[in-house]
Length: 306
Image (tube, rainbow, N blue to C red; front, side, top):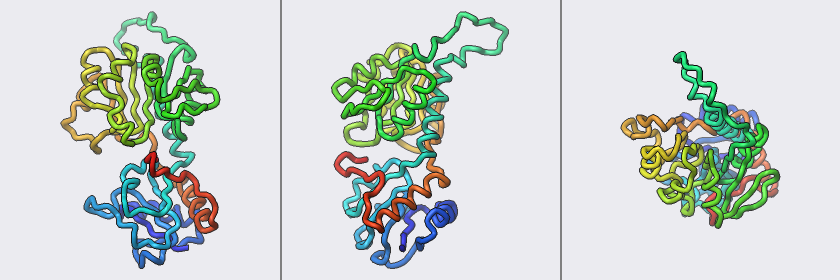
């Protein structure tokens, strides 16, 4: 099985050993006749120079496997007619769950209130987790994993998705109930994908629906959030804090006001890193499925964009 590795050059040294160990039957290549490859492994940034990859010569490829969970940079490529699968792996879900749980706990417990300055602040006692309302926007693989982690601690979790499809143990709301989902969110976690429907969803009108003092966590996609509207809400003292891991432009420019705002914490797109040790076996399984003609894992719905 011949597989073309379409990713920026530094990725080769990191990924090739892991992929060959997980799937020793493949012949992994960075060059060759495109028509001779059975599958393509892809990561954004290929080819260099900001150009879109031309998938038309890969006439025999049965699969294009993304190494990223987000596929917004490739799903609109008109030359891509092969089946496209996004990355969903246990390590990515665990990393996202730990990030969201950690930051939720920080604000739930009010850890920043206890400054070491000699003042005995024993009136600042948080409620139990069961008394803290958390809303998750986006209940795909990652949203469900985050909800399970939060529920494990006892948080009252509400999930929102366009479909409102049931998730065991989570109160689910659908598209028409977005105002309700936002209005009760003491902690709001956005795990929405980047689609035409989600871009700019958290604008001034919808951010104003959040309760006073609410905390926003965005480890999903930067395009969901209106940056200026968020800054206005923070500056008015209506929102308590925002922890942002994703941005419209990355790396976040040094002059961006998020860096200097006292109520914003920036993390550098590390909430859910694809880890080779857990992702390579997922790629291997999909490569084998493609060759055997079996259903592929995490197949992208082109119409929905994810």
